[in-house]
Every structure is written in structure tokens, then in C-alpha cells.
Image (cartoon, rainbow, N blue to C red):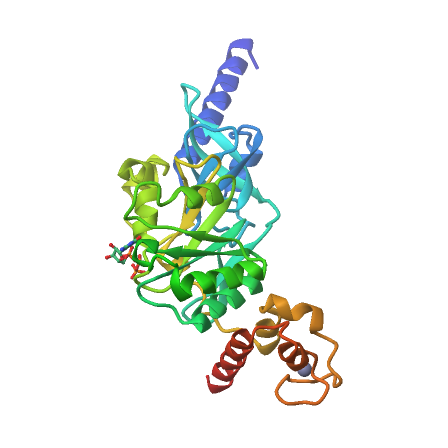
Length: 344
Ligand SMILES: Nc1nc2c(ncn2[C@@H]2O[C@H](COP(=O)(O)OP(=O)(O)OP(=O)(O)O)[C@@H](O)[C@H]2O)c(=O)[nH]1
Ligand SMILES: [Zn+2]
């Protein structure tokens, strides 16, 4: 073979490889692993999922910068908003990261689950630090309702925080609701009062949100939308963080989204209509019992190992109620929640 022919063959090979790479990069159905192996992606770096749409998701690099639309490596499943991930970016000719691929999921500190259409629990968001249970002066809450939310929150292992909204409607002495709030505070729960009707009405809420990832849950009409509107006043802020691809998308309203809140340092909010409805999931008897945190010192101390804490002799819980160490209304609430489980 002549020298000239060889080099032409070499040139042809090089061109072929380049063309294949370019084609792979534009085609969506090529397995990501092949692209990764071909070295088209940059080094691994940490990030956080801020929205997801099936097998594509928006990732915010920890190193900051623009949110990147990412695909999932073939063997990865079930990522949710809030997940910490390892991802690799692909850059264009100008060196801008145009898309990425998520190659690994970080460990989850917590996960929020909801039943899907078939009643199977599915994760909807991860790495949440606190569940803000919003209730309000109007519509007036049942203490039982608050306890239901608390039990559901306890079952996730995520810290519940009680937010009493619309305090502008409270009587001057605070009334029964303030007394109720103090009772929960006495159990060790963080509590916050808010109003969207007065200047500075969200100050204590801002302090509570700082440095944490939160979700808002609560009954209809308590003011969740009003509070979130105040925390994210700028429409641009709400959509601005999404990657350019997802801004064009149509399904942005149903997926859980992670937002940075401008007024509180390091505050993040994960929100979706589904998350706001959290609290109505089915729990078993043991989860309900353990969901009442003041019961903990007494559990396992009943005379009968299988005590159901109804009227059994030597029931440690009933004795604690007698001694005033468990509030009778909380115990009544416990019974009502168990009865509703049996009825369903
Ligand atoms: N007086 C008073 N009204 C409030 C306050 N916050 C919200 N509201 C009003 O309460 C009503 C319900 O508020 P929303 O923000 O829609 O409540 P929500 O919890 O998002 O309700 P859903 O969307 O049904 O889940 C609205 O008319 C608000 O204007 C407050 O602090 N004080
Ligand atoms: Zn008992």
C-alpha cells in the first residue's frame, strides 16, 4: 500500500468516527452508556434533581450555573425531585453544557411517598427536612385533623412543623387555637404563626425555612397557595430555574418542583398539587401508635404484650392518661384514628 493511500484511509476512518459521534449525540434513542463509554461526556459532578418528567429530568449543579436537562443512565430508575445525583455534562463546540446524563443517585436522607393509581406507594420527593402542616383560624381545624397529619408525617421520619395561618383573625387573647398550638409546642413540635394580611406576617416562617428543604401540606382553604405566592412572588423565579427544554414543556404543573426561596438564606421548597394533599395515606395500627410521640416512653410497658390500649388492665398508656402525662384529647384522637382505620 502506498503512503498516500494509507493516509487517505486514515482520514476516512477519522471522519467516520466523527460523524458517528455527532449522530449519536443528536439521536435520543442511543443508550446513554454507549455515549458515556465513547467519552462524549465530561467528568462526574454532584447535583440535585429540581424537576422530573419521566426519563428526563432537570438537574441543578451543586457548583451552580444553569439548570441542565439530563437523561437517565439505562440502569437508573425511580429518581424524584430532591434527589442528589452524580451527573456528567456534554458540551457544545463553544464549551457550553447543553445536556447531561445522570449516572448515579445519592443516598436519600428522607423520602415522601404517595399512593399511585393502583394504590401502591411511590416516592414523589426526596431529601426533605421538614413538613409544614398548615392549619388556619378559618376553616377551623379539628384537633383530630392535626393529629392525622402529625401521624402521617411521623411515619415518614421527616420533622413536622405546625404553621397556624390567618392569625389576623384570632381574638386578642389568642383563643383556643393558640392554646392548642402551645400544647403541640409542649410536645416538642416546632410551631410558627403566620398571616398574609399584615406586614412582617411571615417573618417567623422565613426563619423556620432558612437552611432547610420544606414542603407545605394542609387542608383546602388554609392558605397554602397564599403563603407560597408570598414566598415566591416572582413568576420568573418559579419558571426561571427550569432548563430551557422544560420551560417549553407542557407538564410542568403536575410534577414536583424544587424552588429556592429568595427571602430566606438556603431555603428550598418542594411543591406540587400531589404533595400538598399529603396526609391522607393509609397507615397501619403500629404506625398510628408510634405517630403519637408522647406515647413512646410508655410503649412496651403494658402488662399484656399484645395490649391494644382499650381497657386492658395494666395498660401503660391508659395509666399515663390517668396521671395526666398524656393529654386525654390526644388519646381520644388516637382512638378515633384507629377506629377510622378499622372502618375503611
Ligand atoms: N384573613 C386571612 N385570609 C387569608 C390568609 N391567608 C390566606 N387567606 C385567604 O384564605 C383563602 C384560601 O387561601 P388559599 O391560599 O387559596 O388556600 P389553600 O390552602 O391554597 O387552598 P387549596 O388551594 O384549596 O388547597 C383565600 O381567600 C385567601 O385570601 C391570612 O393570613 N389571613
Ligand atoms: Zn396498653
